[in-house]
Image (tube, rainbow, N blue to C red; front, side, top):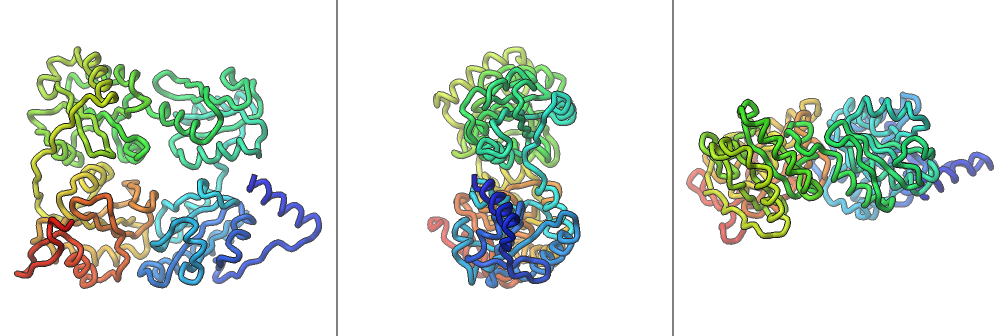
Length: 501
């Protein structure tokens, strides 16, 4: 309804020659205040806003890049606009979106419903911002009118949601836009013609076309964002997915708290048989459990350490994870025992998962703590989840960057120097995440912004802290000397006592 009113306001203004609101502008960037922020949002179909503060060490570095991106976007047809809000002099607007760390980029789509606001997830470069803005200014929902259009989308994409709306620009369309905004796995389509498929003959009907498993799922709930999102979560993934860098963030997202992991070498002769058994078992539990194959490789062996598994003795293995509770449950058949009894897996796994869902399984004891050599680690998506978030016996400082970020190289060099200073401290680990190949959701932001530095306190991963101090070797070192777990460096004792954490 807000979107409709915004369009109506523009139409009325044009018909009666009322002037549309104007906004202060500097270097092609709209400079907004608490007083005119809502007007700016309602009069732009899409607007990327940089919430910044003079107290943030990154904001000054971001501004030239943001201005360059704004120049690129006003020169295209139709023009796309960028805006900025100074949180120091305009605290009301950032507070509406619970923002207290800056800079933060957020995309608004013609209305200020917090559910529709999207975090920026691209590179921190002029080219990256302009490219991301053009991509995310496209319509969230594709409108289709013919069976041929639907078939073309099914041929091109593996997951397509088709919904029957009462009208294209009404409240149902807004609910569907919310679904599309929060679900980047599926292609979301709308029509007002119920004859395009038997499953949508009634208004509010929806069907999901899939290139896997049973190929079609029919929605039978109330047409709301929550119900449609739950429907997609149940059906948008295959019964069994192989973990990759591309699908990792979706499979391991907080919306999928329970996961059954098959840790195996893909060239294991019995792998196809075990995978078939897991797929069959998944039919009974996929509404509550996501089933994932984790191929064993150099970049995934840390996962074995996380569960206390030996590659030679315990692989292949099946492990159930309850991520919110940091619990794991190992399937009783593993290693050679699983290989030799692979034909028994399906019925045993069905019962194993049923016990888990009833709360009848006892979680495994955590493996013995191991302090790894304090080397600078390049963290991939899987390592971030299982190595950084859940392996919490050490403090960790993680630098998020992308190669195309124009200010990242200088900050990355400083970060490397800090890691060298602390190389003799085994209880502080340093890592970096290359966002161009690992789409990892950052703490507090959901979608990443580059560059960012986060401190992960030992034994307290629930309170991850974004580092917002000066980016120098001395400043970051002083921060760790105060906030890290007690440690010794150059004959001096620093940090907090373990029992104070």
